[in-house]
Amino acid sequence: MKNTYLLYPIFFIIILIIATSCQAPKDLIYREFKNMKIEKVGFASTTLKLDLIYYNPNNYGLQLKYTDLDIFLDNTYLGHSSQDYQISIPKLTEFSIPLSIEVDMKNLLKNALPTLFGKEVLVKVTGTVKLGKANMYKSFPVLYEGMQKFSAF
Image (cartoon, rainbow, N blue to C red; front, top):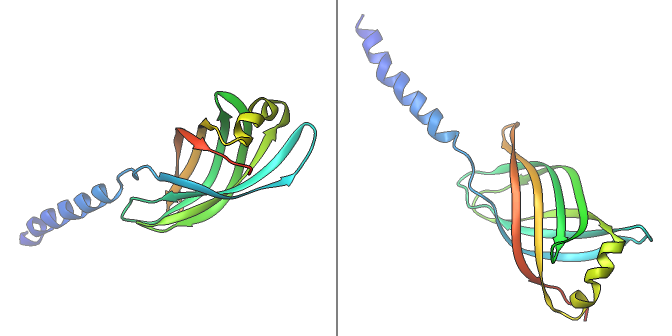
């Protein structure tokens, strides 16, 4: 009988630890992009590859499994990226995500001149990513807007 009274506080502490460890992860912080290059050129679409640099502010590592993103420049649709990954994201550090974007060429031409001459443009990214830990994944919405300066020269 005495043993059952002792189990209640232990059971409560275990539930409390599990409940606090299952909190939603903090948003990843975008830092910059690097290594932008054109992979495949076509009349209708072109494949653009780049690495996105992010910071993980969480006290635990995560895994990135999937991205489904639409990219806009100055509110004009630029292209789409949809990829399956298995990227490990370390805790409290910067990491890179390789991204492949299918660029719609007719919309690219609308934005080409201001971008080539180094004008700042509004970059908007919308979509979803699937993040998780220990093979338990959840989809999170992505909505990023920011001014970005591109320069070809």
